Structures are given as structure tokens and as C-alpha cells.
Length: 66
Image (tube, rainbow, N blue to C red; front, side, top):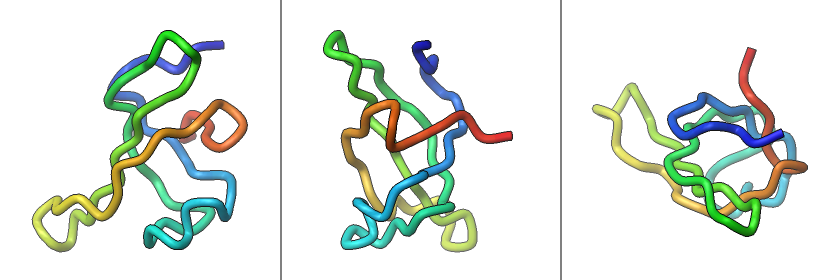
């Protein structure tokens, strides 16, 4: 299942913790790549939406947020 652009997703791995994005954080898919990877942006709404991290993830590392 492909997650569409602009979908809110939950991070389900500790892989991105060094970037300041622990498991359970939320971000948005901003690009879907042909190889099945997703570009995910995580921002801080309490700081005016400043980007915390921008990274590539696969569908085992993120899931659509409920």
C-alpha cells in the first residue's frame, strides 16, 4: 500500500532518534519515490512549524496516523 503525499504518519522505529525524532513522533509524507521510499518531514508546531528533521523512510518505518 502506498501512502499518499501529505498524509500524516507516525514514526514506528527508533532509527530516526539521532535526528531528534523518537518512535511515536508524527510527520508528513512530502514525496513518494518510485523505489517505494517516502520523504518525511517532522516539524515542531510549538516553534512555528520549524522543521526538526527531513528524511527518507520506508513503509516499515512509518504508518498512517490514526
